[in-house]
Structures are given as C-alpha cells and as structure tokens.
Length: 451
Image (tube, rainbow, N blue to C red; front, side):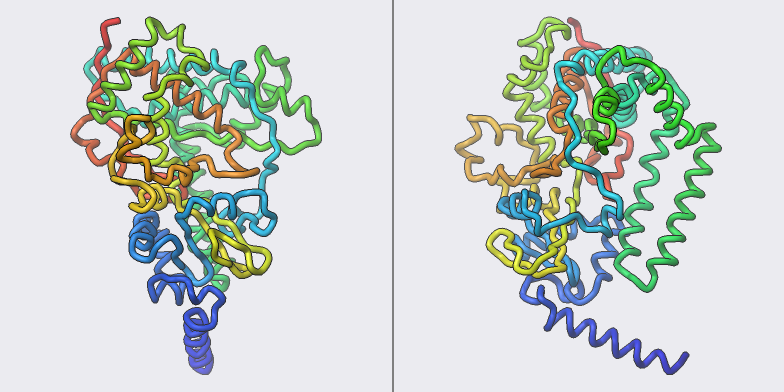
C-alpha cells in the first residue's frame, strides 16, 4: 500500500500541472485552485453558495470564467443562442441531469382551456388567506403558494386537485419533495470524483431512500402509491375538462414531457417592496372591479404587472445556477470564443442577471427598467440575457402557462388583500441553492381590502 502513495502523489501533481498548463481550457480565466482541481467548485456546491461565488468571479474576470478544470460559465447574452439553441454540438451534461432525458417535443396545454381552473384555485387560496388573516395570524406565503401551484399542476396532470389548501395529508408529501433537493446537490459533487462515484452514489441513494421512508412513515403516505393511484384513477374515467392526459391519450406511443412548475413564491416575494406593491395594486384595482373580469387577454395587457414579473424573474430566477451543456465536437463557438470537445458550459442565471455589465443597479428590484419611462436610465441594460425559462428547443414547455399563472395569482391576491412583510422575513431572498432555491418561510401579515 505504501508503494501506491508516491504514484498517486505523482498523478495528482501531473493532473494539476496538466489542468493549469496543457488543458484545452487553459486560456480561460479563473482562480488558480478552481482551474487546477474540482475542490473549490464542489465545496461551494455542497455549501449552497455556488451562485454567489460564480457572480463574484464574473465581476472580477469578465464574461467567461473557468470554475472547474473542464467547466466554463458565461454571462453574455449571445451564449443563450450558441449553447441552448438549435445547434447539435451542445448536449445535456450527464452529471447534472442523470442518464434519463425527456423528449422536448411535448404538446402544450391551451391556456384558454385552463384559465378558469387557475382562477378557481386563486379564489380558493384567497379564501384560505382570508380565514387566516381574520384570526390575526401571520401567514407563510411560501407554503400556501406552493400548495396552490401543486394543486394546479395536479389538476392539469390528473384532472383533480391534491386538496392541499384543505388540510390534506398530501401537504406533507409536498414538503418532503423540497427536503430531498439537497441530496441532488450532493450527487453532483460525488459525480466529479470517478474513483468515489460508485460508493458515493450508493451512499447518497441509500440516505435519500432512508429519508424518504422516514417521511413517508411520518406522513402516512407513499410517493409511488400516491402517484399510481392518481394515474389509474384518471385513466379509468373520461376527462370532464382537457388536461395533460387528454393529450397523452391522443398520442399513444410518444413520450411526453411534464410541464415545469414555476416558482410563484419567489416572484411574489419581490412585489412586497411597499412603493412597487402600491403602484401594482393601483393598476390592478383601476382596471378591474371584480376578479371575474380578470381574463388572460386583459391581464397580459397590464404594463406594470408584466414589468414586475420580468423584474421578479431577473432578481430571483426560478433556476439560480443554470443548466449545463457539454460540447460533443471540437471548436464550438460560444459568444465569439471557441470551446474544445468535452468542455462543459453553463449560463449561471442568477450571476448573469446580477452582473453589473448586464444590468444597471443590478441588486435592486426595479420594475421600471422594463417600462418606457425607465429607458433613459436603463436603456443600456442587456435585457436579452434574461431567459428564466431557458432558450431554444428545450426551453420550459410551461412558459406561457407559468406567466398566466403568476398574473392570475398575484392580481387576485392584490385585489383582495394588503400585505405587510414581517420583520423576521427581511432578507428573505438571501438563500442557498441545492439544485433549486431552499426557501425559508415568507411571513406576512394580511389585511382584507374594502372592495
């Protein structure tokens, strides 16, 4: 065994030397330790602050940064077309996604067929919030918005609600899903070390399954059983309204991709800036005398509402770190630079949207940057870098649906309530990322508005 150590030490020295001076990515800037080993990158992934670290690097080094020996991040707008567009030179990076990938060619759900359903759940949410506010209780908006969006997605998928707003035990199952995100981040760290991958992956899987089993016993429900029951129940009956299974039944033999659930709570949190909220609330109340008037077409024409949504997605994007792509041929051009075969490139969304070159006053929530009145100050912003639902043939299938869902939930809530952020939720957006944002409770006080 002792004879092995010198050879291992020599291999490590050689690998560091190769990564620094011989690697095809040697000319890309970045910290010395990040360019030579995966240690620094993995440390920040495991700590949940990789988005902050990457942002700091781009402010120092520019639009391209080498964050690991074989990985580049880019915050330039052109990279969206080059990396995520229709080129076949870039594919999904297996260590991030796993081996199974979805078919991107799934059909959309007609919005006009779903707007009544979204409105129904928005009204149910407001009824629940009204009861809580009448008791003088502070409200965790993350929890109730998550429950609402899961209800909507369940209705679209299975044709019926999960009844999360009615105190269903399924709410614990939803909470469990968010608790498992940290295991996904740890799997990414282990994937960078091939010699540890087999043992490490098995350990993470065992820990994840043990955690799920504990939570399932605690909640009295099991994920697989719950899902199977919903699918069989839906397929056994005729749909009363169009849902995702209506399309599946019409296209037997095709793989269908699930719509992505949008992070409504992350957007809503940013509207609690008092002056921004007041202007948005005035726009809603001046255009509608009742929630029944809030149609898809009318909501899409509200300029400040749409500006707030765009700024919310910039300030706090649903996917903070971006989606890695792998170059499968040599000399792939990205924003005027060339990447070798085997290079991994990512557009780190949070870092790109907070980059001072891309956006003026990037750390401030300013919907005015998307309004005509703001062009004098924000006209030089590189707004085309904002792609919160990704770009190209594999962008989020539920993009249009998500925008309408956000519009309906926000306008209905602002129509019925005044919101006040509780002091314990100051700085709520300063969160860690383990695959997705790890959101603490967003405590607010609600007061019913006189209508």
